[in-house]
Image (cartoon, rainbow, N blue to C red; front, side, top):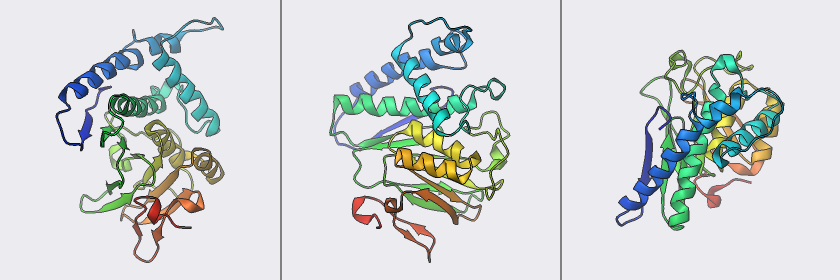
Amino acid sequence: MLGDFIQINVFSPGDHDSLLTSVLQNLSEIEVLVNLDDSNSEICRVLMVEGDDSFEMAKPVAEVLELALDASVMSDGYFEPFREESRNLDLRSLIRGYMVDQAVGLLTAKNPKLIGMVHLAEGIRFFNCPKKSIHVRMSSSNVEKELGLFKNAVSTTEDRGNLYDHESSTLYLHPLRHRVGDHHTVSAIADRCADANVLTKVGLYAPKETIQACVAELDAQIVIFDQKGEIVEIFEESKAYSFDQGNISYSSYDDSNRGS
């Protein structure tokens, strides 16, 4: 989906094949509308329109463009969804996150108690999971960092060694901000996958004041690791995490573990 594999894991017992088939069919219909690699898709036609003429567009296209505009304003332009020379890479990231969010919405609308997760490219979103964590692989294949989540969605950049590959889900468009190096990994945690995907770019490029403002607005979190897997920066509201500084471990799996 959108040039990558989408993974849907359902942890609830029972046969969910028909539900998954229905959800994938719905996602395929949305993909046709928001696929930036198809010049005939509705979103590409909208992006090519010049002038001030108003016109109707499908709901997914309108929602994606509204999210993109809001993210650009929120980040003071450090998230750049409409930059043509970048082949709209920021917009691609947001669209992938939007597709994950749509998948979760479709699944839980059919079965509100369903437990599982959806993964597409750099973004993952859990639903109805009481405890959530992922392992972030650093630049060395032998280094992993467990990241506990206090929100449902997480997005993680790749280290720079992969970022010159056009197949990569993350590319550097600006000079990296101060204190972020070539092999740092930025992980963002938020309610929605689209927001988490946006925040990884903000964490790479934006100044600290902008990052903190974005994190506060979305009640989110940005964690930055160095290539050894050590946490070097955290941006968040003070209540959002429980962090063992001595052991450089991270463990805010649910509200009962949140620090003060």
